[in-house]
Length: 108
Image (tube, rainbow, N blue to C red; front, side, top):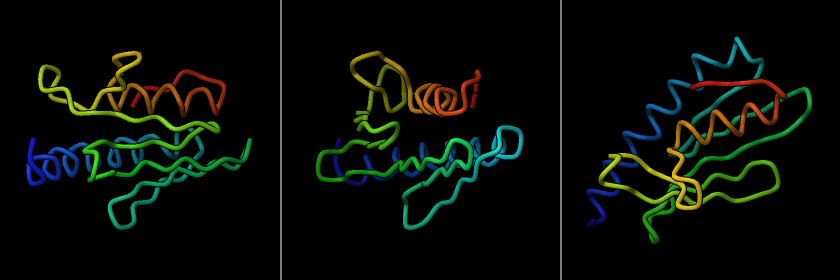
C-alpha cells in the first residue's frame, strides 16, 4: 500500500470512528474530539484519556488507552484496520476499550 492509499483508508476509518464516538458520547458519558487527524476520548469517572492517531511511516493506526499501546494495520480482506493479536477491527477494539474504561458493554 502506498502513502496515498494509506492516507485515504486512514482518513475514512478515523472519520467513521469519530462519528461513532460522537454518537455514543452522550449515552456513555465521555467526550470525543478530533484535532489534526488524531482523536482524543476523555472520561471523567474514572478519569482517563485515550488517543487514536495515524502513524504514517509504518502505515498503522495507534491507540493509546488503558496504559497500553495498540497498533492496528490495514487488512485488505476485512477492508479495515485490524489488531493483529485478536483480529479486532478499529471500531470493535475501541468499543471494547471504552467499555472496559466505563465498566459496561459499549458498541460503536
